[in-house]
Length: 454
Image 1 (spheres, rainbow, N blue to C red):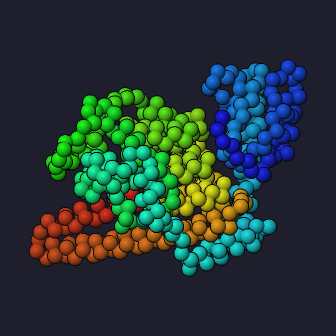
Image 2: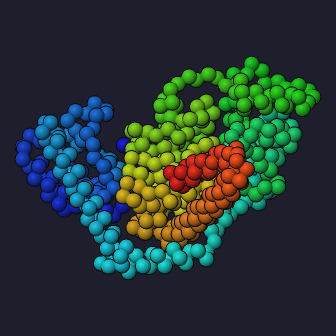
Image 3: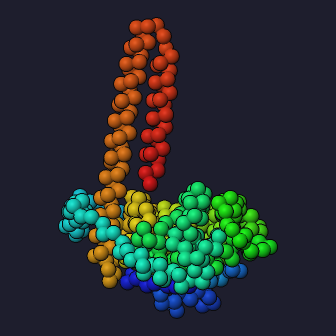
């Protein structure tokens, strides 16, 4: 089911294998092919469900973070037996894991020392700083991007040698047009200078895949003429830029449902067709966070991390992808980065503001840092160190925010008490009502913060 698969040294438990073999040996006509399917599955991370897609009948699907397999049965009773056996074994393993985790947290049992070491490692991370992304020299970035088709002139007015860029739309603009792009707002165009600002390699790699020719092919596709006036005025710039990017007056209409748009974007990311992916998001902005039922409820961003595609990650994050959206097991993009030891994906996600996801846990109450400590990889030590730094930083943000809210709550309470005393002295109540309103708003703010810390 997946275009790219990765394997881990994890296996189906002996108890489950024995139960499955016992089941399959009960019928000589069974079509089950488990014994012939040699891929290994991490049981604790698996889900099992009845397969109702692709014309399957009396079949079930086992889904792991790395692969899935559909197994056929011969009767409804046999199907229910398989589902029951696998679900019971998963529950049993989860209970054992939670029991071991409790012993570890108390410092007892075989994992106690490891837990103490982990806590000491996190404490030490408080004195470390995250390394910034390596920057590309402006001259080098300008030279590389000028070679992209259409980039020798401004995408909007045609002025020669543009040295400003829209880092989410992937195009180059001149100084005069850059001001109008800024007026659109960062939700439409994020403007940077090629000479004053320094790009990192991830942003440069994405910008190389788009360029002015592709950008105009999207935004000016329905334009009847590509001719510009001999003298480009400020009024013309404002008119054409507003019409192209804010009003989207020259887009070719492509009406489709959110699901169809999301599926098209997902397929474009799978195929690494970045111009098509950008086109999908321009036509249907909500598609960027669509969750695919065929891909374990993964968004296009989570899938990009899953396959290690940093260009797609940059494209999606710059155009509204939410890093905290999780799949069916509660894994977000940081969980997958930790699981695969994908240091490049991880440092890009953190640099683009996804660090808050470190506080979000999956169905097993594990965050990305917990996952990183259980799965070894070529850059495992780097991944753990970076996640520890991020964890300490984000925890401090939460504590500081809580302290600020509590201080504001105490201040409002003191104001309310003082105002009530004044009201009693003067025989009025107007100020007290206003203070009550302020206190109510503060309580609502505190409740919202506690509900969603990210």
